[in-house]
Amino acid sequence: MITDFFTQKIKIISIDSIDRIYLRKSSRARHLAISIQPFKGVRISIPRGVSFAQAELFARSKADWIVKHQQRIKRFEQQQQTSKANILPFNRQEAKRILTDRLNELAQQNGFHYQKVFIRNQTTRWGSCSVKNNINLNQKLMHLPAQLIDYVLLHELVHTRIKNHSPKFWAELVKYVPAAKTFSKELRIYGTELM
Image: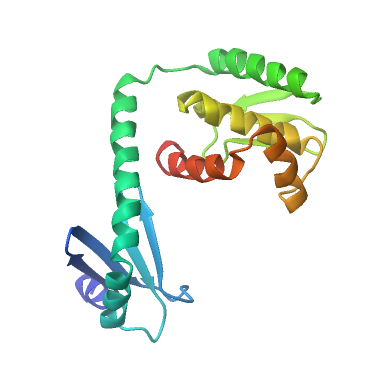
């Protein structure tokens, strides 16, 4: 029964320099969609009514795009493997001291005010800001590059003024982090491995 399920739902193909592409039928997919995730490879979700043959044609039409993004993901994977070997364990007290000092520094430099800061070992968020302007930070931030740590801290500080992710929020954040959109995308890549 399990073999039959995979025979019907999943197919693995290779295209030129792309070794493995997982074609997966999904009842939740609304259109053909490609995802490339670190350590998980290339996957194409196939909606109802679309055949494996059509999905393969779609994959071939996107081969250049896949190769380009696969190279970026592979570089990230190599960096992660190297950094994992060199990661120093941080306990919560160390993380709180370092992150709080930097948060205070950025707040003072940019005129932000917050109430309290809490450091937690979270699995879904790098940080958050409550309606009372209490800031929660993930101790795993300590494993990120410095510019991404600053991005998260400033992201939460901007939330002390704007409590949503509206265009107004992003316009405000860009004043303090001009590369905010780029850092946001980069952070999502780190999140798949560290969270």
